[in-house]
Picture 1 (cartoon, rainbow, N blue to C red):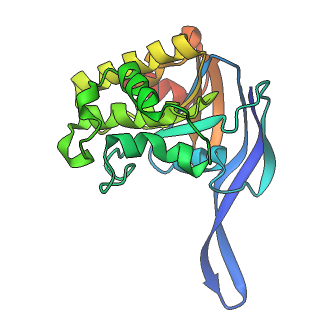
Picture 2 (picture 1 turned 120 degrees about the vertical axis):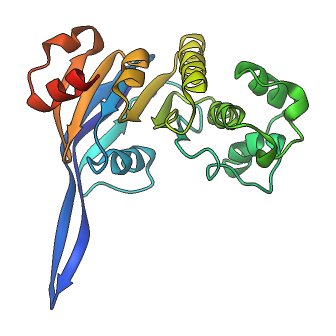
Length: 241
């Protein structure tokens, strides 16, 4: 469904006279995510994970290579995202209902019964309907991340980019969110790109794992075959895990 073919990205680092120096952040990244599957991207801070998520979401363009979505439906929005910082991911001036409807308004999608949609989305992520008039500051961290997941579902995406979605939560809520994501994937046939430094969380949710090191995908392997990794970097992460 998602085909990433040899994408690279660099940023201007410094300038000396008329010559600009660049920092290579990603180099020849390729992978495929099939419908209903999850690919986990594991890497340390500075490995290029955040840049990769921005490229997949279309917030930036790669310098080379291409990203192709092979979608066989006609929905107007096939990709959504859930980010690490749930506080900055929502508008504090909007209540829960407004946050859930915001993507639809941006895409100019008309809903016949928005109240029913809001209730359905809240139910899907395990939030009670009486919260829909509350504001972000009135919700717990776990509730806010569930709200962000519900918002990601509002446009019926085929793919959701999960960029460190559990790292700001306590251990109990981390597991609850992972269980919720797994349940939603099974119910809606969603595909996930799960970007994280947490190998345990990625292993729990993903069918395949790719190891990102200094801007390069050095190894990709099915989760069931993790014991067979060959790169030293992947082995070091597994030993730490």
